[in-house]
Image 1 (cartoon, helix red, strand yellow):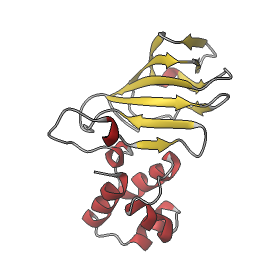
Image 2 (tube, one colour):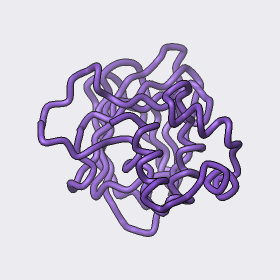
Image 3 (tube, rainbow, N blue to C red):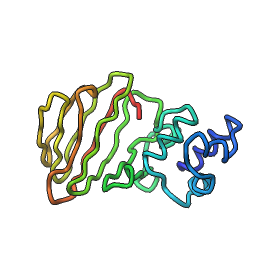
Image 4 (tube, rainbow, N blue to C red):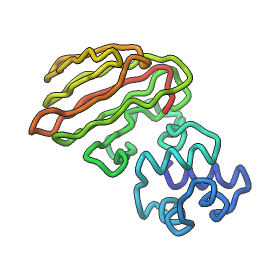
Length: 179
């Protein structure tokens, strides 16, 4: 199920019009229509607003609980992170399990601040190519290169960045899933 289809399905479950959802999410009805018809890919910031208005976690819009445990490359949901050089790809068809894996691409010089969530959780990162810098809340910093990994409590994470001049790719996993 596409992001647009999941959005429409949830909106209809709540018996909400496009205009009502647009007002709650501070987006335009036209933009929502384009998302629902898969004409545009929303940023994670927009998805966050929509998920909040629909009273569901963001990842419920990004995945479906399929009977098939295999997710083919052409079935993955790709989301741009707030119109930056960061791209997040969901790697599983399941949204209701206890872990949520992503393939992430980060352009040179880009950074993403940690989002503070109510539930304590763990995060794990594995660098496939390039370099990432992981900065923790106590100012402890780790620079990871291809093949390196880090496993941390989410509450300690402050920022993930790409300090290099090359694009970095890495796998990240959070448990329990909350986005």
